[in-house]
Picture 1 (cartoon, rainbow, N blue to C red):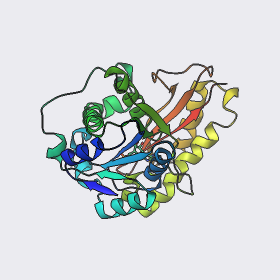
Picture 2 (cartoon, rainbow, N blue to C red):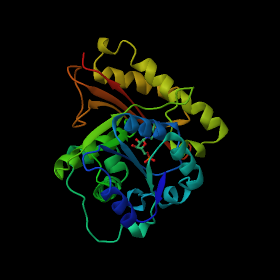
Picture 3 (spheres, helix red, strand yellow):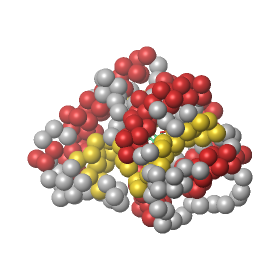
Length: 279
Ligand code: AMP
């Protein structure tokens, strides 16, 4: 696997590839786990070359403590990406990405105003800024993002349309631990008892969506709220069923929707979701 620390070197390498070859790109913040690697595998199935990036993007952190405590392990990331068969890794310093004052943030409309938008002010502006810069450097034909960060998928889709970027967007399924907890780099910060309890979230979600079409979206949210409330250690931030494209509240099951949940367990935020296909 080629490892590039400077964008100039990556751009040089990219230039000599066959111009018609599909190039898949998987942006990450490192501390990789099987969820990230599933994106690499998906990209490898569909593209001739796969590029990953590992970059803890400071502009998307609204909480300095979260940025400071974000897990980092470049050596292990390199090992995992090499084993997975990734062709190239871009692992830059902040100055290599943010070498200009360009601001790519734009009005995301409803997508930016709900859920993580108000809870993490500036977060999606940071995501848009880093992804636009990364996309410009890598010039991929296909980009791969995890359903785990559902709102981020909606943001990136909108960004691709806004900037008329010529690339296909792929939403990849959530990879879970054996007990159902959605894999996340932040899970290592859960203590032993929190980690045990964390699996209850998906248990509650799975039970709430049983026979989903017999209930209204509002009733599903109420069911889930009641179930999670049985565990006082969880502090619910939001529960909602929304349209998968514009993230507006769903009132029926006529098209694809998603049940979004975020809870705090100790100091860690757990985000999870289940897609509900149209009836
Ligand atoms: P991150 O390093 O957290 O920024 O994540 C990089 C990419 O991996 C994002 O597109 C995430 O949505 C995706 N991802 C994170 N966790 C998972 C998971 N458990 N399953 C699938 N994809 C994931």
